[in-house]
Length: 389
Image 1: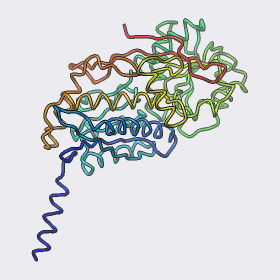
Image 2 (image 1 turned 45 degrees about the vertical axis):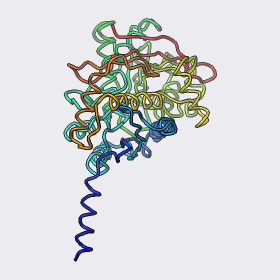
Image 3 (image 1 turned 135 degrees about the horizontal axis):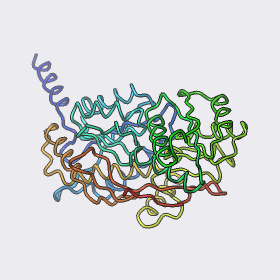
Image 4 (image 1 turned 180 degrees about the horizontal axis):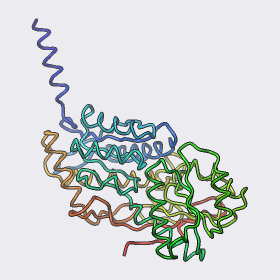
């Protein structure tokens, strides 16, 4: 009988443990390690592990003169909305993490953000540019610019750089990120060039691989430029098929182009093309170059924008941890203290730019965008920077 009572007591104590033991802090990662975009999950985890090792090897995170080691818990959202939702709930209620980094893609970040906000656990998405991820959600943050900023940047660039008067768009209507960005680009381009200047607005559905019908319409539309805000695994199919359909005008992309093995899949067909993104590895300086050099040495490849944004987003959350006051071990209090600290972030100096959050608005950082040109060697080089007014 005594053994049974002791066992039950031990179980209660174990399940009541906070997100940190006396000397550790636990953070969760909601990332796509399998599914359609596993390279995004790999970049996320690579960056996280590199940062964790750097901090832990230095003795841990210094909070008020005390050192805390970092513990990271990774959940695979399989690049699915429903999996991202269950991953968020598991990290918060079972793993009892202090905060969550991810999901990356808007299709997963929007539903996961709803769960994180309802359960009052801070979440930061490094890569989700859809406004709905953070809208009306005080516990949800992001480390990147919005589609409502990226869309007009792409529209303005297409007009000024290519002299485009007519544009075509092709996008996945079943995915939050490309759908929202396609609509933002269309609205901005038609504001500059007049109603009806987007002469083809073609859609497909996730996992489609044949775009011949849509691209035939685009080739016949008279468009001066094609904008496609799709992921690295879809862009090569679209670009190659567009050329085969007789479309020989510029193709412009978005920040989703910068992740994964775009050039390994696209090759010469993508050389000379442009896309709007968060940072450019080629020609980087200062702490950005230090990050790139360290990452390249460790993983034998250049970090993409997902890796860079993940690095910044973890550091944004850890910056909040350092400013949130004494860690009490009371999960509800500590999570709310972290939320308040992150909300007051001002002039955070990240490797993808300086960031501040507006305490009165949604937690979207004010930061600049970069236009990248893919050079003849297949490298992503800085072309120009575009900042908010």
